[in-house]
Amino acid sequence: MRYIFGIFLIAFILFISIPKFLNFEKKRLILNDFLMKKYEMKIDGYKNISFKIFPLPHLAIQGAKIKVGNNLFILNTQDLKIYVNPMYIYNFQNFKSKKISLNNSQGFFKSTELKYLNQYFKKLNSNIKFENLDIVFKNNNETILKIQNIFFSNYGIKKDKIRGEVFDRRFNININRSQKNLVLKLVDTGIKAKFNFDKVNNLELSSGSSKINILDNYLKFNFKVHEDKVELLKSSLRNKDLLIFFDSFIFLKPFFEINSNIKIDKIDQKLLEKVKLENILEYKNILKKLNSRNKLVSDKKILKTSIIEKFSLQSNLANGRMTLVSEMAIAGGEVLCNGNSLLTEDFPRFSFDCNFQIFDSKLFSKKMSLQKKIYDKPFDLKVLGSLNLVNRKINFKEISIDNKTIISKENKIIYKMVFEKLLLRDGFSNMFKKNNIKEFLIEII
Image 1 (cartoon, one colour):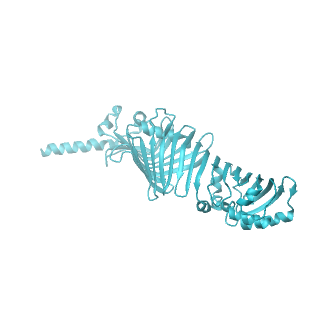
Image 2 (image 1 turned 90 degrees about the vertical axis):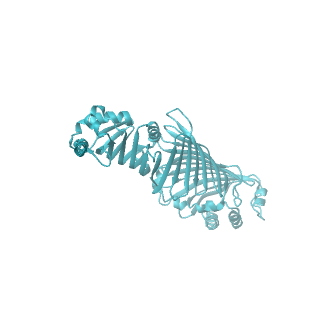
Image 3 (image 1 turned 30 degrees about the vertical axis):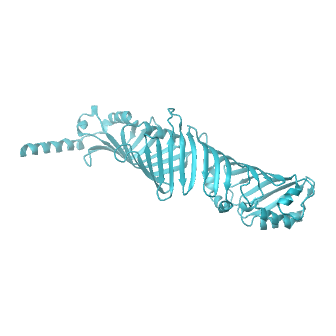
C-alpha cells in the first residue's frame, strides 16, 4: 500500500506540475473562444501566459488587454486568473473553467456607457471576481468620476457585495437581486442610499426609485436612465432648514448638461448665509465645464426677513458664463431683473438691468414701515450697473424714474456708498432683507 500510495502521489504531482512547462501561447484562440462564450470577453493582447498550481490550479495571464461586451469597453488587467481542472490543460479542445478573477484592473468608460456596464453585469451568469478594479468615467476626454479599489464577486459568500472608494471615501454596496434593490453606504460619513429598480424588459431603459440619507438630509426621487440622458422625477430634498421639490434632466449627449425645475417650499435664512459665493467662485475649472439650465420658483414668502413675497428665477450656465432672468413680487409692486457674468474671471462682475415697478407706493411704504412716502404715485425705477462678486462693490451706470428723471452722477456716488455699506456688508444673501432695505431707503429719501 505504501508503494501504491507513493506511486499515486508522484503521479498526481506530475499531473499538476507538468502543465507549468507547457507552452500556452498557441492556445490563445481557444481561450478567447471560451471567454467570449462565458464572459463576452476577448484578450486583445498580453505579456505572458503560464500555469500556476497554488493556491488553486489556474492559468495566469499577465498584462492583459481585454475587450468586453462586443468592444463595449476595454480593461487593462495586470493579472487575469482562469481557474481550471488540470485535466483540461491536456485536452484544450474541451477547455472548461468554473470561475475567473481579474486583479489590479483599470477601465475607462464614457459617461453614456454606465447603463451598458450595468446591463453587462446583470446578464452575466458565469462566476467572476474583480479585485482592485479602478473605473474612470469620462465625457469629452474630461474625467467626471473615478471609482477605485473595487472588489466585486457574483458568487460565493461575498456574492453581490461590492466595496471600493469614491471621492477618497470607502463605500459598501449590497445588491438584492430577488427584490431588485441596491443599498449603498459611504463608510464613516452618515450617507446611505437605497435604490429600488422597476421590472423593465427594455434594455434601453433602467428605472426605479431612490431614498438617500445624507447626514439627516433626506433626498427622494424617481429615476429613468436612458442611453443619452438621466431623468430625476418627483424629487424632493428636505431637512430641518429646507424643503424643495424638483425635476432634473441630466443630458449625456451630445455634451453634459443639467436642466432642472426647482420649487422652494421652505428655507432658513441662516442656511443661505452659510453659502459663500466667494468660495464657489474658487472652483473655476468646474464652473467652466458645467452646462445647466435651471428654473427656480417659490409661490409664497419663504423668508420672513425678506421683502420678496414670491419669485421666479431662470439661470443659464455655459462655459463659465452665467445669465439670469428673474421676476420678484414685493408689496405694492414687482422687480424685473436680468444680468450676466463670466464667472471664470479673476474678479468676475455681474452686469444687471433691473426695473422696480411700484403700482401702489402707499402700500409699499406701509409694508416697509417708512414714515415718509418715497413717491406719491405709481412709478417705474430703472437701474443699470454691475456688481463685483468678489469684492462686493457696486457701480451704477444709470438710475432713472419713469424714463424721465435721471439721477445725477453725484447722487449715484452717494447711492453706491450707502448700498455697499448697508446691503452688501453681510454678503449677497442679505441684499433683500427688509431691515437693510429700509435703512437704505431712509438714507437716500
